[in-house]
Length: 236
Image (cartoon, rainbow, N blue to C red):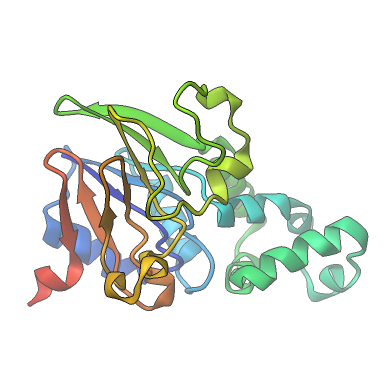
C-alpha cells in the first residue's frame, strides 16, 4: 500500500508512529510525507531522524524545510552570539524562518551534534520537490503546495521552487484531467470551518493538510483505494 500525509509540523513522534501502526502501515508499504515536517511543534527533528532511518518513507520538500536550508549559514556554529551578529540578507533570511515558527526547530538543532546536523542538511538537500507515480492504474503527482502558474502543457521542469512550495490553490482550482495532484501546505480549514481536521478532495486534486500545526491530528491518504484514514477513528 502507498500512503501520503503532509505538514506534520513537529507532531509528537511516538503518537505518529502509533498512528501508522494502528493504520496497518508495515515494511511492505510506502509512505510519502509532503513536506513541513518541522517547525511549530517540538518533534520535527525527531521525525526527520526517524524518516532518515526508514527505507520506505520519502520526504517531498516543503517550504519550512526550504527555509531551514536557506539558513544553513547558521549551522557552522549555532550560538546566541552568532545569531546576534547576523546582518543584511542573512538576518532577513533568519527572521523569515523564525517568524514562520522556526525557533523550535532551531532550538532542537542547537542541542544536536554538528555531525548529525550536517547529515540532516544533506538529507534535506537531496529531497525532491515533487514525485509522480502510478498506483492501481491511477496517476498521481505529489507536491508540497500545489502548482503555481499551472498550465496543462507546462513541463514540471518549467516550474520554479516557489510554484511548488508556496502556492495556495483556491477551492475551484483545476489541474490535470488524468493525473490527481496531492498536496498540503494550505490547512483545509482555509476553505471553510467545516473542513477543520478533514482532507479535501476535488475532481483533480486532494489536500491532506488537515491542520496539524493548528492542533489537529494528521490524516493518511491510501492511494491504492483513495481512502482517508484519521487517527481519531482508529483510537475510539
